[in-house]
Image 1: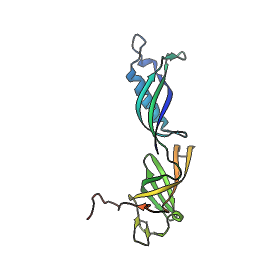
Image 2: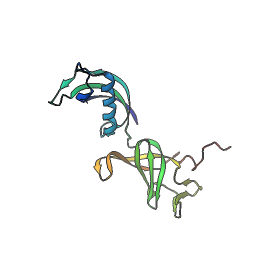
Image 3: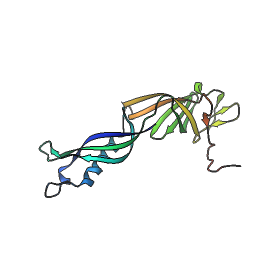
Image 4: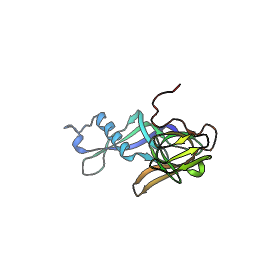
Length: 189
């Protein structure tokens, strides 16, 4: 779900970015805020940071230590993406295994649909494995799939994952499943 949240961050501006009068431009503060959000990527409470939509205020800067760096309290609105259990989303298949498929959904790299949560689909092995339904619908690489979120987990740091959400999903239900064919860029009549 997309949300609009108000956040407060202390933004550090390095001493070398101050002008000769000890002043700093608003542009430097905003640039540093955007860099900080890019590095932070996501939070457990708010989800993925997508865009700063408005800047509410920049407080008075304080020199905190001997380095001369200045910290500014900044209040801003930010658009975020945080998936919820029960939500209907779409993702693109990027890996297929006997036990299920992995999809990408916006900033989420790992949404897993277990073969058990794909009723009437059977795994078909081969060089390009697919899941094929009784109605001949295919789930293969690069196909867009409409799914329901069954569970969401926040992973702070584990192996290659850092500050990421992972999802378990299913296509049990009406209007869920593949919604486009691989490589189909146009509407066929």
